[in-house]
Length: 365
Image (cartoon, rainbow, N blue to C red; front, side):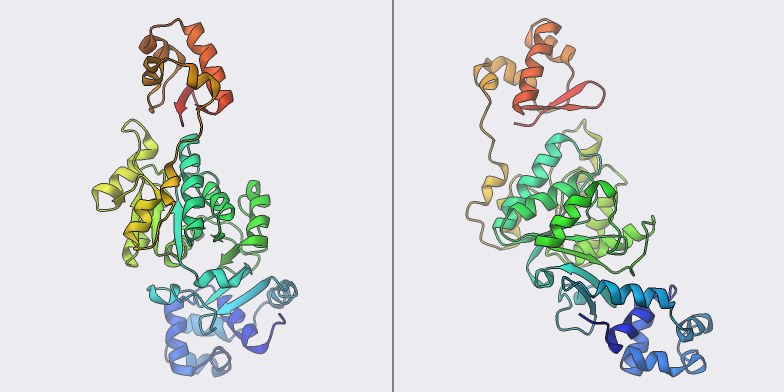
């Protein structure tokens, strides 16, 4: 898609650092389109907005930025959507601060499909990762595109589950779309670009800055019918997304966890504040009044491994679902530490438990 005059004008305005979307919308109401804003001149603009911003709007855009956008648009998978474009996400038009410009790479039609945000901790537990991926796949198969932020941990698991289901996944990022952050998710980002969609409101070349991510979070919730928080510590960025969802009138869901887990405390706080406690994907679909069919499979147990099937009920009860170490398990099950350690090795190989930091384990099946 070539860079036409209208797109060039939108890009020039998006590069004015202090021109927020509210001010830009006010100028659009006065002048009608972005090119007329640029043509108005500093003096005329200063009647409506702060003089330093009027001066910045009147300056020529960096030629490198326009050249980069032109080169980027040579790829047919890439699009730039202004708020006036017919393909602009309808859900974002309902929020208080819709971005005037979106950069999109991939399947643009996904932006107007029913979607659900799934977010959570970057330092996720093995159980959290499994929950996120399982819920995402089931909900994707039920017709919801899965929206998340391409971060490590829960976000990445949610994207993988969404891609594995029938409705794919949308990643909203806090950088320009010519940059992949974090770099460890490069392969995942390429897969989303090929089969889903990458979205950013930030101009090309924008690097990862701390202030970008809270701003990015309002778009994750804004594109969605609701937001599911899988794991989150108190103070987690995921809770910012949940608060954005509430402010935008979206549903908020949370998966409860162990009372001993720091990564469950954010979810428990949300539930205390009125978020819907969910135990299966069917709970989400029921709340959204969507058909759920086989959605209960979101929590279906995986087949037990041979070692698990041979274990006595007392041992399985001793495993529980909270984190534990070998000594704790040995004391609970009435066996030696060496016996407990040997069994833990087998269970980890089978995928019944997962290792946690500090020599601890957690049952995930």
